[in-house]
Image 1 (cartoon, rainbow, N blue to C red):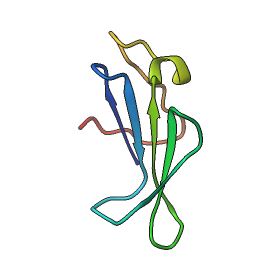
Image 2: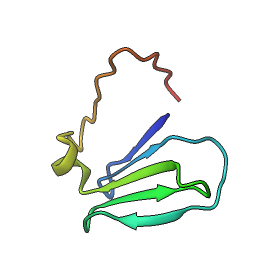
Image 3: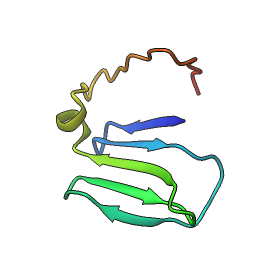
Image 4: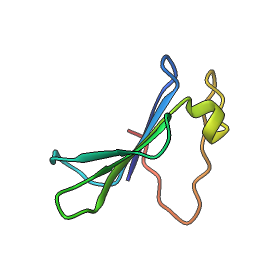
Length: 73
């Protein structure tokens, strides 16, 4: 899993699959969308206005990782 955050547009993306694949995007709300792969598996989740929805700070974003090994990209 990879988590990306762009503070300029305040958007986060949670990617669950590696490599490129064709997706179908389903909007859950105006700010949250889920990308599904060909076999209906979740490929990724996009969160717009992420600082509001995820409680992160735009100027100093940070996450806490529990029970997972973390690598810095």
